[in-house]
Amino acid sequence: MAEIIQRDGIWAFDGDALRLTPGRDRNVSLLRRTLGELVVPMGALAGISFEQGKKAGRLRLRLRDGADPLLHASGGRLTEPNDPYQLLVESDRYGVAEYFTDEVRAALLLDEVPSEPVDEYLLPGPSVPLSVSAGDGTASFDGEHVRLEWNWKTEDAKAAAGPRTLAVTDLLAVEWQPAAGLENGHLRFTVRGAGTKAPPKYDHNSVELWGFKKDPLMALVAAAVQARLPHPSAAAVPDVPALEPHAPRRLAPADGREDDHDALLRRLRELGELHRTGVLTDEEFAMAKQAVLKAM
Image 1: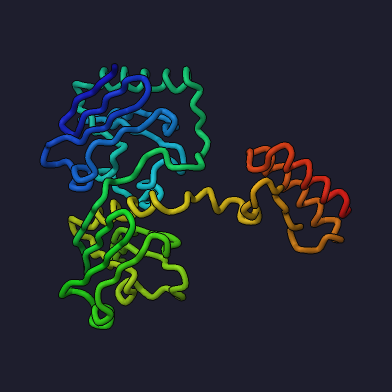
Image 2: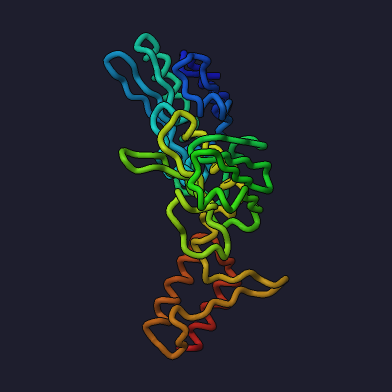
């Protein structure tokens, strides 16, 4: 067991997972305290680093792309105080931090954990139910439905539509954008069939954010919803349709013209890539390849 205890939090490593517990110091961000303890399995970890400074250092974890719905929903826009994968280290604990880093790195090498993106979430996302009031509204999520309610600061045209209840099954995407400079932020839900997006100030599927203390908490709502949406890797192979039971995959030529020699060559390369990455089985690859060769 390797462990480092700081006012900013406690990180512990047992060889299988890292347990990240936020500190109780008043300088620890509201987001991290609300998120609570995180357990990061080794399979979700891409790397760890420790950076020394004159007065304090910083431990940083790097997760594999697609492993954590919070990182995906926030798009790398969480500031350092709100990032749960960073730990502020006091200068007299540099030796402990270096030891901790070495232990985790050794385990990554020993377990041969790859650093490539993953095709499923390896962390569950924030706990629900969850409710956050910030900006021009309140966003609540119970695991199945998002409810948006407005306050006295909401634009009249937007408030006139009344509260919104959105089923997860009707959502295509969720986006959290913090306020930056003179630009306001937002929590936005993309709803199936909703049409063109309006500015967040007028969009009744968005909460507008102005850069106040509770704004980062909206990222937790976004992450909790994101954890229940299809993983982003599902969009990587849109041209491979769902299979009927015991039926082989059928792939159409790239541009729909079976007599186009160049298109068929491109399709062969695409099939090879799908087979290499495990999307197609050996049998499916052989059948699809044979079909393309016959068309040539």
